[in-house]
Length: 63
Image 1: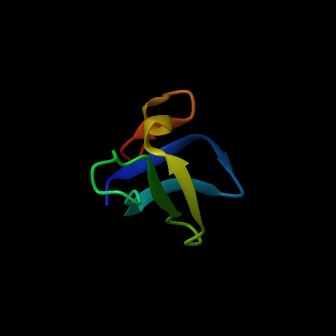
Image 2: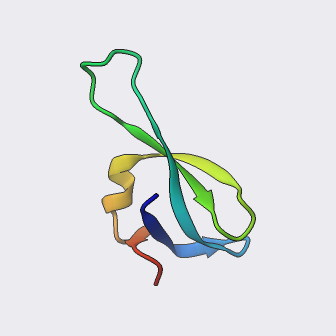
C-alpha cells in the first residue's frame, strides 16, 4: 500500500496506492509488475515496478 503521485496527472488521477503486487508464474522469478489504484476513482493500472523509480513519471509519497 505504498503511496505514489503521478508527475503528470491524467483525468484527475494524481494520487495512487500500490494495491497489488503481481507475482510471477514461477516462484524463483523476480517480481516485475504492480497494480496501482487511483485514489480519486479507484481506476487500476498495471505498471512495471521499475517505472516507479522514474521521477519524470512518478514521485514517491503524496505530493
